[in-house]
Length: 370
Image (cartoon, rainbow, N blue to C red; front, side, top):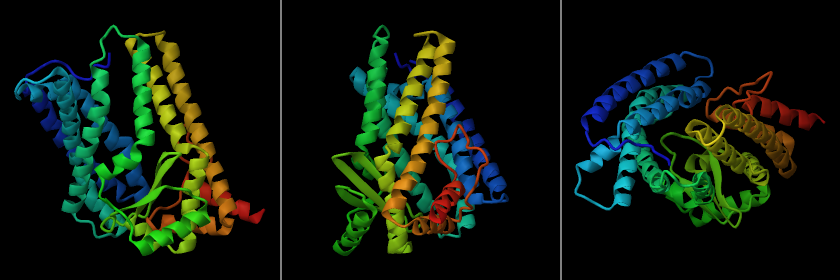
């Protein structure tokens, strides 16, 4: 039912497509980086470049490579194997080939990001970390998606719905174990663990354990909580603990606690899955095409609106745990450290699941004045 690859076993056409995709991708990344470096708020614009240009180009490349059957062509070169294992390797190969395109579009941006953020990030170190991420993510996606590809074409659409829902549950609740497969992590030392426990207590953040992500080269100071309600794991970058004082760190962790309380991540994943199911049903003719397409768009708009609403609610939650002045200062320091110019919008972007950082800071400051 979910046909992501053709059955072609010829490696010539997909390789002939892969080479120009890599070359064009490298050119797109280089030109995009050159343009972004000359804009105001270049760090924010780099994020937009990744999300609005480079990632869609990579996604398009996956569609082309999968249609040409690059995974099946690679597996055809190997000895005969069971059907499911063959499908698994073919899916992994397709994602891995797409990862090569992503590395090609990503590599030209490394120097630009390093310069605008003034960090000591070598090209080799950045590519090594991204390559590990690509390989790990390709393996995870292959394990998750390959079973859907062997569903008989006559199976009930309900099977596809259940399969996509299962994917959502995996990414929602298996993340504490999946993230260490993609990035280098370590357990905190006793002194660091005690400090983190104190910060979590101040922030109202309840987690099962903590892992430290190595970000000394790229100097990103972030926090992330993933997992089911009975097993939540906190991921902190090493830079987060080094650069922020306890007041700032506690305020930022309080925001994470607020997002758990308001189910921001669950809303986003559910939105993508629900919209994806409606879109696939529309494209495959399972139901009326245009109403289902409209439903897919409507789900995205409503889900993203709800995500923005809950982000504001999470900030309110954090303001109750720490003083509002400290919360606005923490957001400002976060932006300053990452060389981000907080943006503000007169009207929210309906296609964005986030609230502009400048609008969040202004809103928290207004709470301080009340």
